[in-house]
Image (cartoon, rainbow, N blue to C red; front, side, top):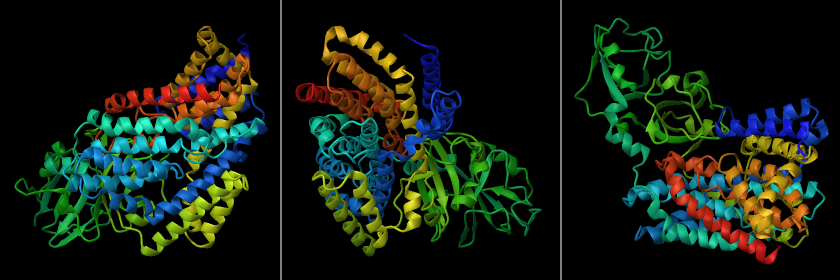
Length: 591
């Protein structure tokens, strides 16, 4: 029976889900507001609300971020992939050579850094082999998601559910328990992608190639004559800093290229001013005395580069501080030593003044970066760079192999029940800091605090569902639908509900919401809860049908030039394969 408290919790939950689906603000902030409402309304006590911040699963995730950063820094994963790729004799064989080790890597490492690291490598290789990268990037994301289901530490979802089992006083997952259920799904899923799935993907050119072909739509050049009234004055004084539809990206002065352009940069006779933005509004500048449009110039992106600047593509992250802000309000140029040439969303260029564009998760940025860009992004989680940067040094590679060996050693100790997962990761991180495989500053940066805040808040929301009776109410509704058709139907409905939820909100949040419901459903029909918990754990990770449910899908969205329907086309069959395989394994061996 629905009480007032259950009705209130459901109302708050629906508002939270709508906020996540429509991306009103950052996901971690939405969950924090939701948790705050539940505290202020008295649904949760302060202790119940914030116990997620000390949960063992959440703390283990934080430590694993540091471990993954140390190994990513070494370049081990991309080094292995580079050697395996070779020449692209066939797409199927190349996919097999890439996806097999990627799946193995993602079973013990966070999948986000793997996708971030390998995306630029795959794109460069595809360009060299005259193959469309769009045939490889979604498969790359899917392989890391599948690999993450093979072990306890393969994905944050597994550790979140592991932590909730411990909090509930139940027996937690062993290291390979989830993998025993998921292995057939991983095997058949990879087989589907390699043999058939890639054919459903488009043949798209990368953003840089597309822009180069249409450079006159992106950049335009004006030359400064001797009669320009602001000769030897600053850009700010000349009124070129905040133009209506244009952005001054670079100044070419004889053999020198000034980029990014500052407000204090002096304009001299003969300077070639390179503008980006709404090139159709360039006529306004032509009316200024002393500025002449160079329509006969062979403009290309490559001509903008010099020894100190580089062209970079980047994808705005789920947890970026830039989200829902105008570019000009985020002080982008000074913050990153980079100017924005263009912004693409859903494979279409946003035709607006660059500074007025409000950034959203998944936006693909084309940047002209200065010499300090590499250093500045090392302390930022604002976007994922999908263009190759500097290769790691030999010293970092040696430390990376040492880090990987230590990780394997800790996994063995956890598997043998000599150490708990949390203690093993504490020891590992301490050792990595001691041998300087990662510095304290890099470790702090790698923590992804918005992700941890989201997970910790999700624990409190899960507690509210359980304590208020909302979980029991929702479980009763699901059982009412499926129980007449047997336990298999109940299991299927639970899996489908979780899978549908994870396609539109974050995977960890979906797992936390469905965990108390799965426990209640198991108790109601009198079976061991672990079977239903395994179902929601895998279902929460199996986000293949949309680009927004899993951050690795979002990372490749822009660089692959994909549309929403590309994920639907290749993802739904994969969802079905994973679902049937998982339910079969659970029903056969656990129910």
